[in-house]
Length: 107
Figure 1 (cartoon, rainbow, N blue to C red):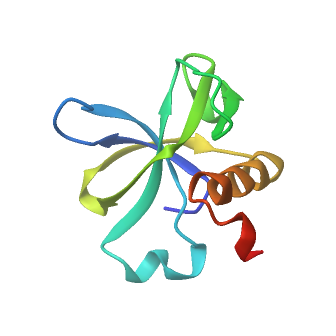
Figure 2: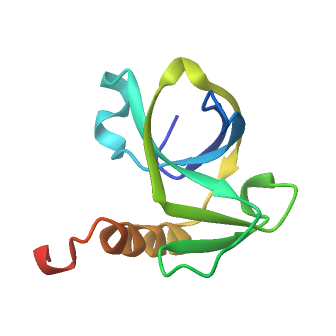
């Protein structure tokens, strides 16, 4: 498991199984039991906090990372590795995560 990976995850409840992007910083992933992820959806809403990723990481449809939907999920709920986002897309994810959390003035 690595930062930038997309996994099929069992989110439980209404959300069920869906792809999600690992956001946790790489250095701590081996030591944690839970990782922070952003949900991925095939329905973009035009929010400034979503990133269009087309069909990167072997996704079946054009998709969007929803950075307003962050969750911390136990590693045992990660079911299947799907693929990885490229470095350019991950930089955009980082910028939009800052926006989603209202941290712009911290930079």
